[in-house]
Image 1 (cartoon, helix red, strand yellow):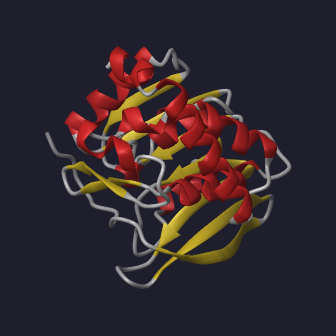
Image 2 (cartoon, one colour):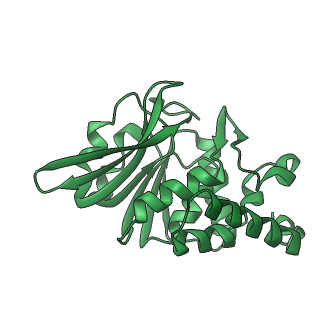
Amino acid sequence: MKHRLQGMGMTSRRTRDRMVSRLRQQGISDPKVLAVMADIPRHVFVDEALESRAYEDTALPIGHNQTISQPYIVAKMTELLLEKRSLGRVLEIGTGCGYQTAILARLAEQVYTVERIAPLMKKARDLLWELDIKTVGFKHSDGGWGWPEHAPYDSILAAAAPAEIPEALLQQMAVGAVMVIPVGREGMQELHRVTRAEDGFIDEVIERVTFVPFLSGVSQ
């Protein structure tokens, strides 16, 4: 993988800069989010055959019927989570290829990420280690359960869409915590930002989105 980190060189940097310019045009304005999107090499998170498309604003397959989210969605969800606050301790549901994990890890105190597909989790863990991102804990588990051993969390981000927000995730939020999660069935999904207040939860609907469905159980 090291040759892929070095291989695209200045070409990779230029394409990342173009991606960041496009994100600005799409309304992403948080300088911390834009800086980390410019810094993380997205091309190493996709198969080499798709490397030339890594910085396009599109989702790409990563195997096992999963995708890496388009750059705009990664940036938008991160910005919604970060707005006017610190990420603190983050729970991520759906590690996937590890790209969103890497973005969060550069902005958070600690990330705990859960993935139900074992080969994806192992590949992401190895890749983040090579990128010298070591403030991430990994767990092979059903995302609907969260990771209660490390709760409560200051931030939760989900990269798959449940029909309804799992109660277990709500209960693992600290007071003042924010969760960004797509909700709904295929073709009818909306991105939600949920804030835990002293006396309950504030649920904001942000925009229409398309994500892989939230599945139960684990896969070896």
